[in-house]
Image (cartoon, rainbow, N blue to C red):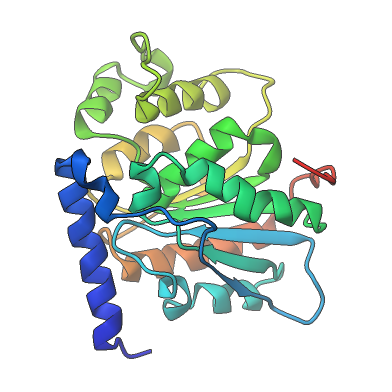
Length: 267
């Protein structure tokens, strides 16, 4: 699909807005978090599937990027086709601290109420961070996470964990309420890096070996099954993610699905 001028402009605008608001938080009003979320739905057939994949974009991405890069096509060609929803949960929702509320109210709670018994979050870059935050706060809603080069915190935090030798050895200081990245790593340590009976979603993780987030991703990968971690030559770009997505789906097809969620009339 050939990019149009409008498409490129929207992607450029989002990247610029992110940079401005990240540096000057007082300007977050220029990056509004509108409710309800804009979504784009895709089905592989006429009948509703029991499994739903919810796609969360990265910083400069727009609603149609997953379709443009044939993510939906790959799901429908897999051995386990699923219903799919792309959510336009751009960086503004993170700046306004409404990403988890909107995901739950606008997408996940209605999906569970309508009969989807298996819900997966697919997140790229910042979307991977959002997927993990949602799973941390609402573990009972999510069966699996498919994470492509997820953002996992600032370099200073990643260096702090790496200096400890491994996530299991890391001893975080008292975690402030607003320090979402440190809270996330504390949760990852509890449920993935230590022996724990706590319920935890199945995780598939993929990233390019030249990705700027590779160091943090590798710290998480150490505690995931080796056959659910995918590393390919490449950087932080859609070409790399397309290759990783195909590999992830092939592995997903080869494994039995997790037990289904209990249907909820309300959440």
